[in-house]
Length: 295
Image (tube, rainbow, N blue to C red; front, side):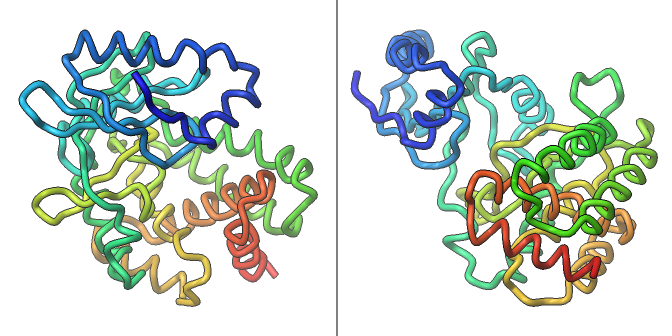
């Protein structure tokens, strides 16, 4: 069995000291192919936290085999996909959490490549997120938006220092205040299933021409958490971000202030993280916008 391991995946695994997993991976893929009756195709480009391979099912259906790297818990993703059941997200076909493996519906090109107008993308992303949202109670084993805000609040100051203080202290303080307000605003009675990272590369075209989301983080949170990632999108677009926020609020009925605060959180955390790993100019664009907001 021959397939390429993308460089981004290889670098992640080596950096984490898990080189032995690279040697074991062909055997894992071969065993999954045998058990699930898959014909293995080529690996696909994408993220750094999972091997993604095109496969063919026994009936000829095209699908995706995704195997998370060591340390990557695919449990929340599998739970989110199971609950969504193909609405707003890719359909989950099979799972093996012990081997961090998911068999998924194969979708088409990302929205980034098929929709040229960023404003139109924002509307389509919003529609995909709305199709995903559904009430879920605290009995569902997913992290909450409050927990995410706590984790960000703990991580951001240290990451900001490590990245060389790439934005102003006022911008960090503003983001931390937003995190505290969103943490306190969490309510299990109104929480829904949210994706957690809605953007144009995480939305792929389905057979009917609509778009479905992939790679859900899987959270129990307020819907504004997802809409805030859409406010973060396209930092070089030059549009009025408050107007964008109000449009999303009007389209969904979600509180504009909550969307704005999650947008601030995602913008600053993503910007600082991007600067820390050299993902440019994305990081600088996000933080330049954040600094303008707090100047």
